[in-house]
Image 1 (cartoon, rainbow, N blue to C red):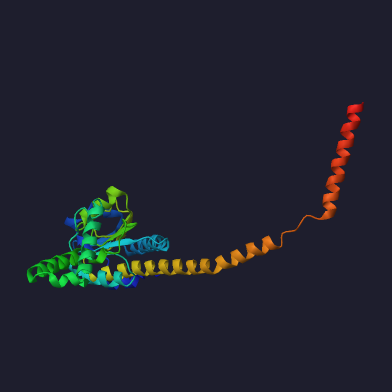
Image 2 (cartoon, helix red, strand yellow):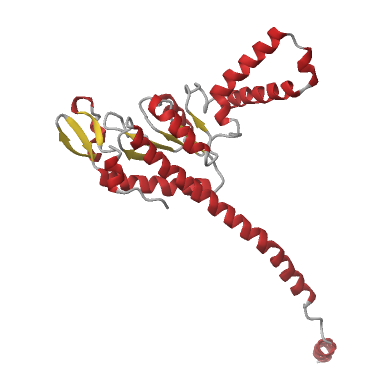
Length: 281
């Protein structure tokens, strides 16, 4: 499991919270002190929370389920998409489409529409369309790709959400909570940690802080995926062995001995004689 050190968090500026007047009182357990009117986050607690979140993330992906990463703020978009692409997880870095979770079938229809446009572009009938029709379809495809291209492989609801800023992504948080989907999140001192299943107290504005924490999560995802592959490989190797052992047992099953049959017949004769004697008495 990847470990994030205290020094790494310090260098990334993960300890800097917001101004005292902007704080959320529910974040008090995670605040170390106040300095020059700014709250300083307790990085020891951050380390513990990162480890807890990474362990849970690893178990989710080890079971073959998906985690949806959400980061639409400017400084998080590119770095989150780059890191998450490498582990093949779905992500949203553009505007959150309302009802994405609560109205998931409609989102899936839009994804299918995008796939059907791709098929149409390869079909000979594409050449029969006018320039205007082609332009309209192409624009529609670009729009769908921008919004839904990163979740095209998400065939069912995700097992969990990872959110960079719970205040900015409050609609996503609300939808996940409504459906009972666990939420992992970087939570700053101005945010409310209530209702977040895995709170990671840290600076959610500094790009280096976001990168460090998201990298720890994606590494945990990678470990879970690798362990799943290894277990699957072992099962594939063990299956023919188990079959051959079962076959061997069947082939080596002992046949009834003639002596045993004689003994059985003798026992049955003795019992019959005893019954006849009882009847005569």
